[in-house]
Length: 87
Image 1: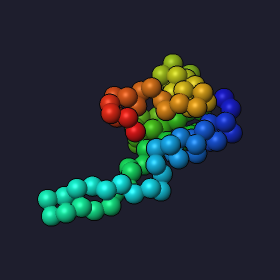
Image 2: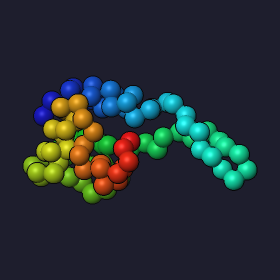
Image 3: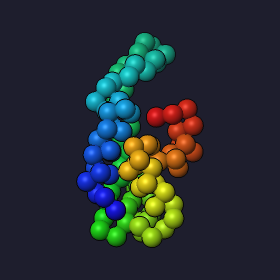
């Protein structure tokens, strides 16, 4: 697993997702600025944790697909369930 590539691509994907850019959220009384919600991803020597979920070992096929998506420069395909309209 190329951790340097993963970290580099995560930074690029964060920019694409609007990291540090506020969005206007309309409220009944007007509007307010809202920051995009972070998506926590923790890398360990033997696996990952995403969304504060369960530990996922690198040997798990879904973990391998998630990391391959990131290494290929894409958001993990499994995020489509959480963000059906995109990030």
